[in-house]
Length: 495
Image 1 (cartoon, rainbow, N blue to C red):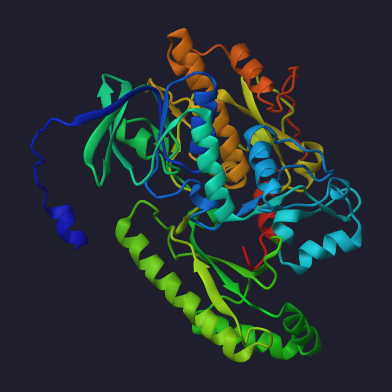
Image 2 (tube, one colour):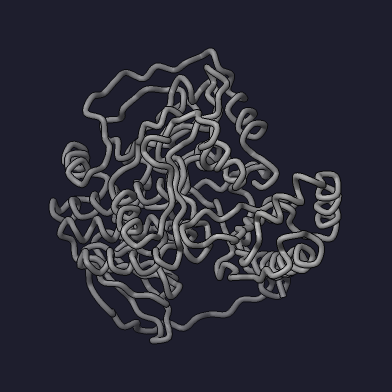
């Protein structure tokens, strides 16, 4: 099949395509970044349309069952991410659809609180070791109910005034010289177009900017999380007390069983679900590392990995049910309809964030987000936050286009750490706001006034510092240390 597709081509005849709608801002992709972009653009007065290929919004946060919203604070418990992320969590909280540490427990080293998250095997998302004291401390992170979130995101988008098209896959762009002027999308209604003054790529993999001919970076170390795909699935009706008693009383037998499961091709590691009213649920986040880098843009590879991952899930379920106390009455609650893709193509923007920026205290003139920097030991201790400039969302040479997803302009090291759900919401909120300002001013997105953008984001509750400090690079930590520390300290067997 692959050989045939490379060897032969067909010519698609020219045809007229119906213009479904004209808008100020068109957002392609309804994941965390796309939702943030659509809401922000519409709330700032732009006629906005959001198109999403699945029948729900949320992307990896819902369809991928990656229901963890981590790193909202640094190790001290100081919160950095606000804006639409907090609005989303507050709405979920009113419906019992979120779990997070109490405010008094953020940054705490109290053993009872730390052990709660370590026992759930969620330490990578909730616990970090204080570089100065050696104590483990609790971060402000949250877990969400993906089914409740689907409904809330629908409400948030529609309440903003944005138009929403589900079951619609953006497939091509409409270009006028170097400017993107619209998107072609496919659906059960056929092939149609939406014209727009600003197009926002929130596809995750940069499908829009690739089609537009923008420069991008696809390099990534195969050891990185972002180079792997994953299948997430949930196992329910587990008696965790019985399981814990068995694991504690017969550790050697438990270890032997998990080794046997691994040899059979199963998954020995899981998170204990900590959502309210969902006791007895295990979350399996099953990475699919390959000998060579996984290509999330290769449909044949995606197919093979999905089939294999689901087979391995059933191997795990059958084994645990048969051999592990506490799992006797368990059943597979659901598997993610979306294969988890964690990284891929990244736009080459007007600014590219690199490892150097993690060792800087610079607040950029165009800062649109402040992110907690928790994963790099001594570096994180000295520089607990990272500022992200708007220019990381702006392609170098293509006009009419912004990026609002994990494909922001960044090195692969930076991207691995700062491409998760709350980060993407922040990028989306900034991109949507900037797009609306560009439309109002009649300028290209790259010409948006930075002060107007940051002032508007502050009014929306986004945490943006008021002062600009000179960039100071700390030379005492080697360039290899961030990656080394990250892999050795925080990449547990379940990651």
